[in-house]
Length: 385
Image (cartoon, rainbow, N blue to C red; front, side, top):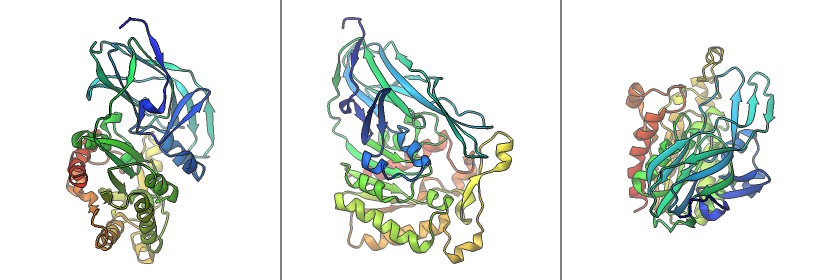
């Protein structure tokens, strides 16, 4: 160790949990969908979500006692709504939390919910600094914010950085909604998939996309082409609150999504996970929307705008989707013994909601993320055995 800071190029060898790295004039931008899939993204919502590095982390081995990371974060604001907390960066030493930091400035994107207008303002590079680390050789992980797009500009340490050795852990590839991405979780290692992966000893690749678990074929192809020892897909809440399709289309779309994954993973354990309990959509179809009364109070809440009787015409609710997913998995498992169904109500049900209600009526809070992760960890152990 020299005490002088040295810079290490940020390459794919240092990054875990991303499917692609985009090298730009302003730094390295991790993506959770590959370039081909991004070319087919139909809306700004998914483009934003896949660029937010949920589950993405830098991993390296070093004797450094000081680590600095230069970043450009993207701060997103809804006009008239209090700003979200700054994204959290967490540093782990040999798997244990050793530091947390945030940056308060960066690029900004403001969205007017009334008009849909967006304004973008470039921002500065800011430095995260972690000190007082043990001086011996160790594995260091820096988990990036689950909800804040981050360009990685430079990595500096006061000792040489080496590629971390393989952990030997099984890779878990997961796809889901904003709940899987980590909405309302406080930290990147506090999102439920990160909790489950840590407890089960798995390496997480998280394709949880806010508002965008919509059975998109390009997402299925990305999963097909990604190495994994265990795969899970959590389906339902976005299909309902987007009012995306009717029952007639939903079943074939699920089959097609699973068929595509199976093209690349014919015998990999595959878990189909139904939605957790969410009262606004249990028996009421979408579309979902922001609650205007909440927005007038400066709070984010959601509501369902459909009519329960519309299910007779094929509109979807969470109850309908759970039944359909259970049926599909039961039928397919006759010829696919590595396919299993996980009932989302076992992860968070009506009794849990009474004790830990969803603060915005849609997303779990930090304590509930922990609960869901703890309960899902046993499915990783079984599915990955």
